[in-house]
Amino acid sequence: MRWDAQRVSGVAPGPFGGSGPVAAPALPGLDAPAVRAISGLLRSVTTPEFAGITFHEVMARSALNRVPGDSPMPFRWTLNPYRGCTHACVYCFARGTHSYLELDTGAGFDSEIVVKVNLVEVLRREVSRAGWGREHVAMGTNTDPYQRAEGRYRLMPGVIRALADSGTPFSVLTKGGLLRRDLPLLHQVSADVPVGLGMSIAIWHDELHQSLEPGTPSPRARLAAVRAAREAGLPCGVFLAPVLPWLTDSDEHLDTAVGQIAAAGATGVTVVPLHLRPGAREWFFTWLRREHPRLVRRYRELYGNGAYADPDYRRRLAARVRPLLRRHGLGADDSPAGSGTEAATGAGTATLPGVNGRERVEAGQPGGGIRRVERSRSRGTGPAGIPGDAESHYPAGSLPTAAERPEPEQLRLL
Image 1 (cartoon, rainbow, N blue to C red):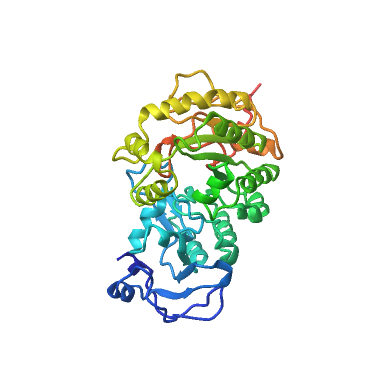
Image 2: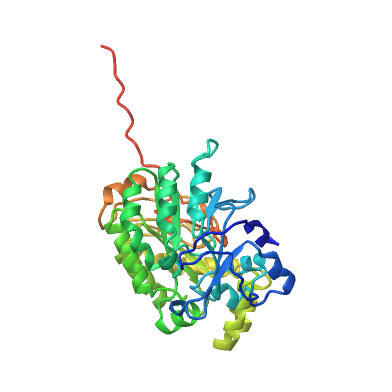
């Protein structure tokens, strides 16, 4: 059982006070042998501030996770301060990972949060080793590092400093408005290491937002975080994800989304249709049967037994998004529908859902810190392989890119 990797001996203080280990009642959904197997658990904590949530504090033996060699993701290392997520997004592709801990992938994923309380110390030890290659470390690829728990545990400032002090570039993908707390620190360390920021925003209808992602900040709050990042001189790409067929894929909904993202000054946008991995699929269809039973058959036909929407749907979505991007100054090109290309003429770059992108035209962006962001932006199509969707590309600004340096002048002997 993978909880075994968290076993430690001794005690350690926790952010909520006290010392452990402390005997806790059996975790919901776990049988007696499984409970006995989690001896590395320091304590389980509940607090009125997080009603219905249990935090399971553990001592991590490692901080960095190596990405499997066959993964399409364009980085080799990830880091997750938390397992489970209080955002409670019905569609979250990471739900299945809670089963690795023998925890429930439905309500348990939303309410049983594993916290690696010693993460910063372990990370500093790992990145200080002589063999560490200072490769890009991605955060937010599984669960959100800026979920509500971060406001109490405050792990991210130490993580950011540990990576920056070691010269390690990093990226953060989040839905959390709490990102704004750390923008001064992120701006400070961006002078020393490349930093990429990504914000995920999907639902623009208030009632649907509360039903599908009840623990997340509002779209307005997330747009404010994008704007604040840009004003701080940092890049910030937006993942318009996931687009839900027949729920958030109308021209009106997409037009509103793209317009507000452009107005916030995002350095890039990628549009990603809903994907349904095991764990997320079952939970999403339970929600769909309850809230929109008339759509169940259509979704089953569209997704079949797989995680991805039918390719024809993805191409049609790309064709409909392209003129909206032009209208709002994101300027998609005239490539065939579904090519997945990126383009830009004002606010940033846009990636369309489809197969593989081939070209991107770049231009200036509004907002503060333009010169710095422009230097750090990549050339050509952003790499594919976003978490949960191997075909979609990262928006500009969401991955760290080394600042361009002017070519040294060549001295010529006379």
